[in-house]
Amino acid sequence: MSHSAASPKGTSSDAHATSGPSGSSSPTFSPLYRQIKSLLLQRLEFGEWRPGEAIPSESELATRFNVSQGTVRKAIDEMAAENLLLRRQGKGTFVASHDDPRAFFRFLRLVPLAGGIEQSQSIPLECWRAKAGPEVARMLALNLGDPINIVRRLLHFAGKPVVVDEIYLPGGIFGTVTLEMLRDYQGSLYSFFENRFGIRMIRAEERLRAVPADRASAELLNVAEGSPLLSVERVSFSYGDKPVEWRRGLYSTNAHCYFNQLG
Image (cartoon, rainbow, N blue to C red; front, side):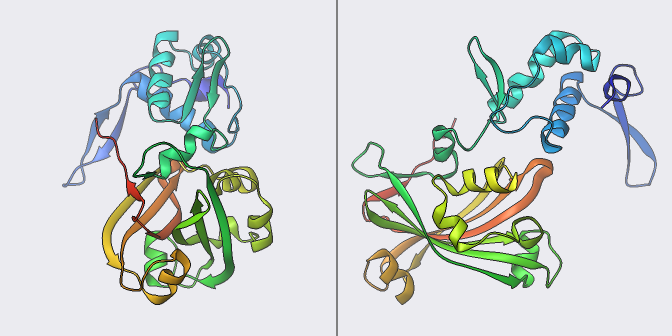
């Protein structure tokens, strides 16, 4: 990307026009650091800097975008607060990665009732290809009948089954995934998506409700049929707010609870 194309300075780039209800255009202003943040997000989406890699220094980015170093710093601060970038004292700023063990607990909020941290193990059960039905198409912004991949897996904590997931993935992105690949990979599922397919999960939306265990889930989770389970439905998004995963999980809460820290 050339410096001239990237430069947001000047009144013409400090605002963009939007159409109002009557069709007329009115300017909507965006702070300069937000424009820099948008440019940095584009670079991440296009893969200029890969997960785990260092991005250029603040002074280099300030020169590249023709803005002050303070403006770049404010953009990076906001991206670091959103877990998109990671500052390392004395080393620079790096693209956040699911390979970082701390990233695991951003998306899995299950903790033991007894406290502490338990070792988890993902056990893939099935992986098959299908066509998107109405619900999957709506959740993943696909067309009806588009190819998808479906993964079923168990998540063990301290050697005991606690979560059973059914995961729906767009075939256009994850079409080559196989059960063997999932079983061979040593690491989290999101780390697998990042390293094998170049897809980083940025944020997720979840919906929780209580449901009774059906026969199949009761057998997998080693609980009595009809026992209360926590149903967690999640849509995960990558750069550009693109939905790239829809999963439905059933959580056994006999020895675990869903923990979310607010504020």
